[in-house]
Structures are given as C-alpha cells and as structure tokens.
Length: 635
Image (cartoon, rainbow, N blue to C red; front, top):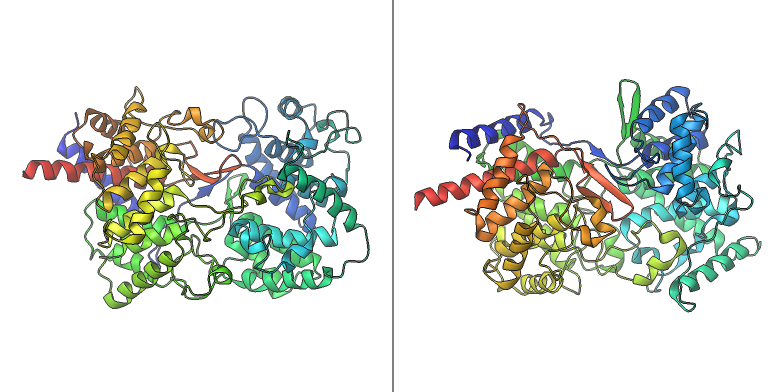
C-alpha cells in the first residue's frame, strides 16, 4: 500500500515536470504522433513539387524503416497488424531511397502486402497519390468532380453536410481531379511486384455490397458514370465549380494554420494551388508550404511529421489537471496559460455559419490557429478549466465563457449530444461513396464529447434540472453498451468513453448508485488486469469483443482510476491497485513510459499518440485519489 509521502512526492514530480515544459508565452504543446503514412505522403508530395531532396528522402525512410512490424508491413498503431495502404506507401518510398526489392526487410514487406491483396486494393486516398505520381491509372481513381463545390446548401449532398475534416481534404482534391496534374516518378514500374498478377491484370475494383440494390452499389454505378462523364468536354458547371473551390480555399489557407490546420488538407491545399497555376513565390503558396514544413521533426538522421499541433488541447488539460493537483488559481503559470487561451478565443464566423446562421462566434480550436473550425471538445474543456483562474481581467474571462456556452448550446445536436465541429452532420448515405473509405465523412454525436460537455455544465453550476442537460443525459444513457461501457470516439476506446461519460453524469448530479452508473463501474472493475492497471488496444474498434483488453498503459489506467473514484469507489481495492500501478511505474523525472496509441483520429483508419497523455492523466487520477483520501480523513 502506498504511503502519503510517496503519493505526494509522485504528484510533486509530475507537477515540476509539467512546469518545466511550459512555453515562454504560457502554453503547453506536446508532440502528436501518427503512423508512417505522414512521412510517405510527405515524400510523395515533395516529389510532385519537384522539391524532394536526397537528405529528406533518406531521413524519412530511416524513420519509416524503424516502424516496420515483425510481420513485414507497416501498422497504423503501435503493435497492430500491418495495414495495406500504409505498407504500400512505405515500401514505395523505401525503393525511392535505393533499397532493393531483394533486401530481406523489403521481401518481407512485399510478402505482407501481397497477402493483403496487393497494391491494387489500397484505399481511395492512396490511389489518388499513386495516380499523381504516375503509378496508378486515372480510371482506377474514385471520381471527385469539382461540381461538388457548386451543390447548394439545401441540397442533400453538399460539402457542408460532410465532416469538417473531409471538407478540407476533398475541396482541393476536386481541383486535382479536374486538372490531372500527374508528375510521374522516373521509374513507372518501381512497385510492379506489389500487384497480384502485375499491374495490367490486378483487380482494381472498389468493394461491392453483397446486396444488389444498395446505396453502396448505386454509388459504384454513379462513380463509373462520373468517370465516363469526365472524358466528355461539355461540362457547363465545371469552370464555375472550380472557381468556387478556389475562392473557398483561399481564406482558409490564409488562416494562420493553413487549410484545416491538419496535414492531409494542408498538403492537398498546396497541390491544388499549384494545379490552379499559383507560382512558388505567391504569398498563399509560400504560407501554405511554410505551415506544412512546421510539422517536421528532425532528430539525428531521421525525419518525421506530426499530423497537426495540439496546443489548445494540451494547455487546457494541463491547466485543469494542475488545479486538480492543488496548484492554486492565482499561480503565475496558470494565469499566464489562461491568458494565452483567452487571447486565442475564436471571434469570427466559421463553416458552421452556413448551416446555423443564428449562432454567434465563440470557442477555441484544437490547433494554434484554425479560425473556421472551433472544436467543441476543446471549447468544453477550456470553459471548465479557466472558470476560476485569477487572470487580471475577470470580466473578460467570464464573458468568453458565456460566449462559449451560448455557442455550445447552439451546436447541440437534435439527439441531445455534441459532435466535434458540426451540428446534425449525420447523412449516413455519404459513407457509401467510393472516396469515403477513410471512415470520416460524417461528424455525428460523440459520446465522449457529450460527456465532456456534461462535465462542463456541472462545473459551471448547471444540474440535471436544465433542459439541455436532460437531453444530453438521456442520449448517453440510451447509448450505453449492453455490458455497461460507452464507446470512445476520440480516445481508445471503451475505457475512454466510459471514463468521460461517467465523469459527466456525476458532474451534473446523477446518482452514482443508479443502474447505468453501477453497470459502468462493474464493467471497469471486470476489465482491470492482473497487474492492477487497465489497457485497451485500438483493435477494439475493429472487433468490439476486444474492448477493455490490451497492454496496460498509464493513460488508460488513469482514466479508469479517475472514473471509479468519481463514481464513489475511491475505497475499492481495484482503485488502490490501480494507484499502486501508477506509483510503481513513474519515471524519476515525473513522467510515465507509454508506447501505445491511446488517441483516435478516424476509427479503423488513423490513430494518434498524444505524447503527454501518459503524464497529465496519471496526475489527474492521483490527484483525485489524494483528494478522496483527504476527504475521508477529515470525517
């Protein structure tokens, strides 16, 4: 059993470490890690621009090789199975760097790729990149016609009924689809060995629905027709649609973080501008390229890229968790960080205005700058953690919170929950489109974001007597899984969702002895591992029967411990064992080691490793445990 001095010392070490990581202007920002598609696509992008240097190629490939799985391919999360599209792109750039197909690691990669169907079965976005560098024929690329941009907002299929992240990726792709700006690699046969039967005989068809009459099969027929139509010169809306795309992109690229402030959209934006005829020295092109280059991280003889920056997210969590650990509200570090957040409040109209014109601008993005896309999750946390920080202008702080509250209320979905960037973004048919295989065409209600908003309601004094709270509570209760857990959209996975929903329900006054809470507590207790911790693999998104199982991690153990404490189980032996797991594994510098990916980008497609989840979430759990002990001792 831990001792009070041991617990205090552990918490103090983490507080000291986090203080040491604060940036001079007051914020915190950790590395955000994705898989090797980032490095592979970056090299393909540089080749297309004519800017691929031998040094960048060598350093990126050096990094990519370190991520090869024992099975031979490349994974999209640590310890996962090889993924076909990531493996094909990694193999390709390794060949570009001079690695022979006969090298043992390349032979193993080729075998892994062929075992998964070969290069003709890659996803739609990989097909686009292979086409742009001359390794795929245009006829095998999903149709993304520019006329998408001309669809009016009242039309069922329009860009504003796609998710924000898909919108920012797809609009520039419509430009590329029209201009067909192929920049062929010097060896058009460099990955022929990856096609079963060779490139000429391989099966490039998109997966069909077994049922003859289905939306999926309808869109496959439409895709064939659109490709045929692409070869017909008469397209009365084409020039108008391209101009709409250009005018739509320009202000969003000029935004401080470039288009969407995320790697795929930022990269597509540069390619689209160049395809439209913008020169290298055009201010918009220079800005877009510079912002993309900021995502590079060079260490020794390797080069890797981040998918985006997470400063608002990290700063809000650090503020809140330091407060939970006892750092006072007038601490200079917290005051400075809060002022940094207040200075970045969004005050201009974003894409949300198209569908919801009566809402007023407010909130915060996820990244340093992304003014068209306030993030509902970040906004919920920011409102909660800054509410009592003693900044110089308390009235300005409170006004920002009030604006954010009104914005969040305006963005509540019809079902009572919250999504991430859009409201009522639920046209399920969109997921059947051939270019929708990135599993992110929609932005429906997220249970973890809804739980976070409930937590914010409670922190700001709202309880379940309020109508928006009642609707949100009814929603999360109706979506509880049969075994008591909740799905996690933005964190892995059922541990994350269960933690956040339980915290939210408790915050607004739900009885933690109620059946829904008891079932969730039982689920958490049932999934504690033999070593005392909790862990869950990203594989649970593909196979829900694996939920709550995987290698134990510091972040997931912290989520489970925190949830159990808030649910009234602070004295349970499972909590004690979880705390002991965290105490025993803290590094001398106040951090924890965690290789696993416990963040989610697009379920089943793209995962994230937030490098500080392993640090600031254990701090939160240990602080909650200490607070519970102090309360028990005072009785």
